[in-house]
Image (cartoon, rainbow, N blue to C red; front, side, top):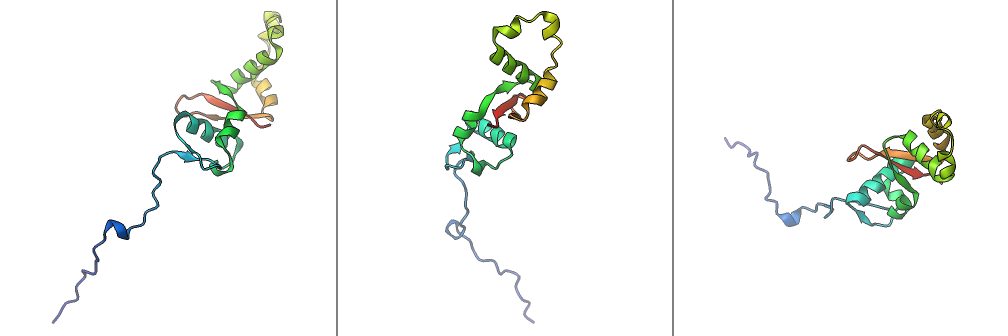
Amino acid sequence: MNTPSNNNEMPVSDEDIDLDIDENDGTTDENGTVLEGDDETLFLCYCEAIGIEPMQATLEDAQDAYQGDYESAADFAESSARQLAGTELDALPGWVSSSINWDDAWHDLSSEYSYAENASTGHLMFFSLC
């Protein structure tokens, strides 16, 4: 009695396999630009912060919106106020400036800015929504 063989395998060569392998490990933006390193980090944080997919933005969008890295949203709010007010904020008496709640100030700014955490530094990367 002949037993059927379970050996139905065909030899496969590299030419038989059409794998769509991207030759790079970077992220691609809307323009098809491959991003790596710091540019990729900035770009991905930007996309996360504003809630879009990478193919919907460009590195230039991220660079234009970037406002800096800060340890907290309160730090960003204080820095923004100091940039706007300049020496006038420093001229306030200590009891006034120490009474400012920078977390509340961030709450007021959050309609104009957003952030995402940079996993490699633990800092928050801030972006303008305008």
